Length: 540
Image (cartoon, rainbow, N blue to C red; front, top):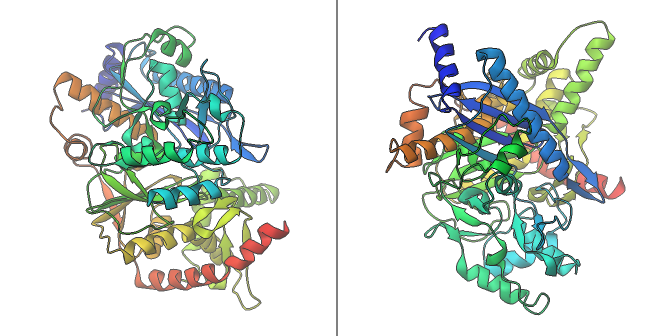
């Protein structure tokens, strides 16, 4: 197809209302993408930068910022479509919403928000997570919604008896767009444990929770507070007139589009890398970094480094989630970019990253004895309730720019590698590990170091740069295809392989033995230095 034919086809899809919209609310950016007749091709995109706030010792985003940011990202997408094709979208075949998983959004009887949104980044739920892990016999991470609720019970917070609805950020936006209180099973698995046999909340554990809080909060029935659970391919409502106005106050957008179940960023990352089948996995690197590994069998015992969640189709997944990802690396890139300006050089952000990443390839395999912690926030895998970014070296460490950047990249993978070592010990086998996120835009650097850290091949698909917004758009396209009969009876893995990723280019890097040995030495130093990190938290 020629460029002119592609432009005409995209314009026709937008005018005819066949296009599919995906929106993801990430930690630092809200991104919207538009797909045409092919779910593999993004025909327009928009975004809006935003940041969390640390208010009253809680990481949060206001619902006003959610609304403003959504509208700005959508308006940016609509303007992009008009620039490219001369038309603005007025309707869609389907759309979907994704966002950061977990956290705590609690609403009362009049749908009022009872306390500010508590995001996944908060680590104030230690007592609750420990108690629920023991009660349930499965790991309950600090950021899960049920941990936030039970911590509020333990703290006797006055809003608890007034809670009538709990959801995630994706579930909240979906509710505003459709009026339906539902979640995709992947996102729901970050609220409360899922029974994979029923693709719903674990009924026995719900009963245990109700009994646990019966004296403190009489009459609380957790199942009545949680969203209904849906799996990929099921329709999750339609865009209402109120929802259309919420997203596009200009009045151009019309109601009626079908929505897929709202999902978390972990699930959309799996879709965006075609890693939803057993023995596949993916690493997503952004403000946080996490690995998702689809399991062939349940993991024995309780491992606090591992969350048991699900794919958007409901299959069990071991998740290694680290609160801290690329933010500290980004801060250092900003410093080096400013230095370039100060000496009269001109370098945009991408050029700075490219230069630093390429320099890291010249570093020693073990980063020259340097040690870097990227812990802006607490890190449960490391036993940290709070974080303090650190760079530490001994007098005989080799302090060079190459080693410094390499240490920062290694540090971004440190906590993740510790969690993945637990999976290795459990005998979990991977056929492939896909990676996506901005860290992998510079070819052959972060991907190579990650392969050394995980001691496994790491692949990056050329589509992966579009990330979770594209992933949720693909899930919306999957629902639309099923509604039309084009994908009825086709499971999600087959749909991705045959309709989305067929023929797509994938670059795979095998672990270099030198990198494997070098990272192992760094990881030993990383473990040994944890008392220094904890002392920094105590002292500063």
